[in-house]
Length: 113
Length: 112
Image (cartoon, rainbow over all chains, first blue to last red; front, side, top):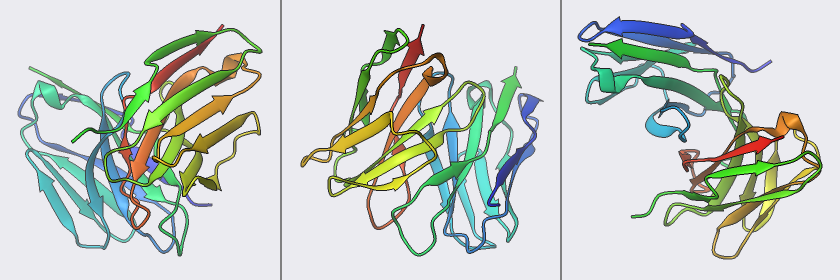
């Protein structure tokens, strides 16, 4: 069964302490992997799309990478404002751009000063 | 450039009632998807609309229905509400040619 698993469920970092979040997937024929940031009570904010193994994308302190089985979201020198839940998602439907996104449960990141 | 907007922000209903939630997509987008997000969970796909038709549907009962208008805006209707329908309802818009979905702020529905 197609599945997206994120780890860890929660991560506490001190400001400046770099780390990585993991998203592993079992969807065959991947047509993109998406990373979102979600603040409490708000809608997810789009961060990155990755399409092929070896691809990397960066935005400020965040860098997303993709392999054939998983994606990593690296956070370099995080600040308290990076605290949020980070979600990854994959499209479930092959052969069509009209499709459902299947989300993991997210990693809740807390960065303390 | 206006992003995805949703209304209302919050809603409180009682069991058995019906509710309608509204969504306006990001400018230029033609596809609208609806998701339900329970506390501590990732969003779950409800259905997707393109060209005013439901194109994909997730594992939700027929109590959940929707509509897309010619201006691409959309409504989500839920009939016979029960306690388990309490959640954050998210609307996302995209272009039909790719799956990059942009989310609105959500509607928090509480069923008492």
